[in-house]
Length: 120
Image (cartoon, rainbow, N blue to C red):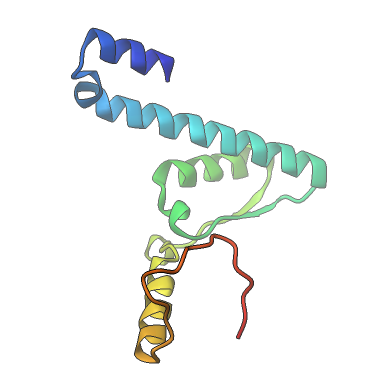
């Protein structure tokens, strides 16, 4: 982050001119962290069956790294076909739509809360 701040001071267009490289670097770092955490969990638990799902499973680099780890570490990995790598946005949207149809919604004055107890 300090590197980027320094570069932006030197060149205000630095981010726009290097956006692809910045994004690739961030992705690389995140995947390195995730893989290191996964290796540690496997080491601690002995569980070698690794599954990935949701929107993140669409990331081609994560898919590639899991496939390599499967061969290198002897893991069994479960990676969905690409067409099944959707995130929860569609489920959230349909839930909202159905609640709207049933007039089950609050007015604009309500304060959002990230952690609500699920009730029926």
